[in-house]
Length: 316
Length: 257
Image (cartoon, rainbow over all chains, first blue to last red; front, top):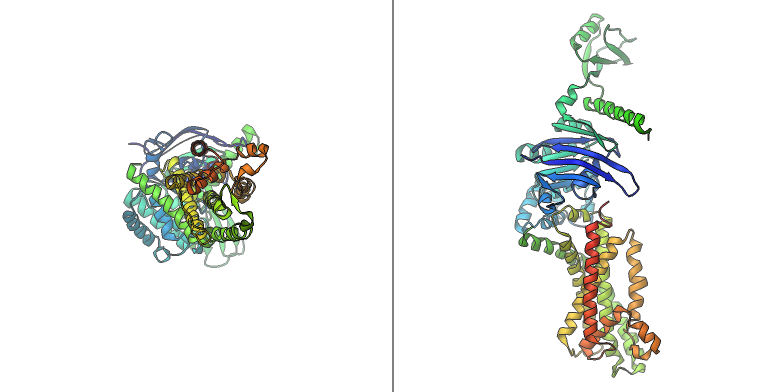
């Protein structure tokens, strides 16, 4: 079975000699929900730009569901839907016209396109706005419009380049639910780039981290999170503490009189820490991760790759 | 894409282009009709009555074909230049780039859209001219042929300009500094036989002279130049412009980084 997306030896050197991609290999299985993460300028958007043919590659091969994007671009593009980072529709067009025009570009007959547009605009909560000019929509609605437009030809591979940037948490969660649904029920392969690592952790099964134009990590989300050797929790206390309690074997920090930070290494039992706190008559009301788990790993991996890069070729 | 899908895609571009210039008709269709009415009144009626005849026809009759052609040229060109550059500016052109449409289909769609505006304005200006003179078209087929060819040629020109343009100024430079002077010097208001011999020869390198004169020949039956050569020259220009536009599209000039 062909991969939904296969990238081999992809390089991109811009006209100003900037090496944006330095030989990327990447494979996204069919039906996957895949996260492509990296700091700003790492090469995420360039990679996705090459896949969607908005960026010309310098060398390498890209195929979508086994179809080479250079040799049979029309067939490959039928399988691809793209939701870009920036708004890229005619702001003066009506919402419905934007979606129908995109359907036309794929040769979908008008009647069929109208039925699909109706369904998508309803699913994404835009049906009432269908006669409004796109510029009248809120930021979140504009993002949903781009999702509707990308799905009108029912692509098997959907690229979401920071789809929830600037979207409030409530709307973001409803967009997550929608993406999960099309991934699970319709089998659409989704590649997601995002700066909300919580989003990637909760949605994606596999992940690649890109930095300085190279893939520095490519594994399953479970394996990646399994590499986390230390987690830090914030404990909310029932009563104030005057000074930081000492618990042997654990790293504890007093954040304020009612909050402690507790770090636990892999292999340690959190129950032991609670037992020691209990012995000192400290009652814990609730606890939460101090930082998102994926965020901790991400920062560590990116820093690691920056250090390697610095040692190899000077820090930029 | 199969033939039916291509037809749908082509019609999608054409329809949205026509819808665009119809929606903003006060900017696209109204100004040329007002401007040309002024030309007819001032140059045709007031000044023309003193000029008398040109190449054996009334001056008003003489300038009508040139003015119609001038409207077609500027409107075909600016329609595609502004529409395609606008879609580049708003990045909605990306919708087309990521779609399965081949480059020639995108180009053809915009050229038909631009030609449609050129023809629409041509019809409006011709209709206005009927208030000032009677048009007795001598060679209808040639007249229609040269109108369509001219609209197509300048639509492709507008497309090339939009591809190469990086800012809005870039798409107004060519109409202002190239098209308008060439049109005025292309025999719209005078016969090149009135010029000294040297300037007659210089005029012959102006491609718009051939279009204006062929169109005038179609309507009035008089021309400064050989009509067969003119039609051939326009056809050659269309082929050259089309090849250049396709080459630029293939390289992704102004579209892909």
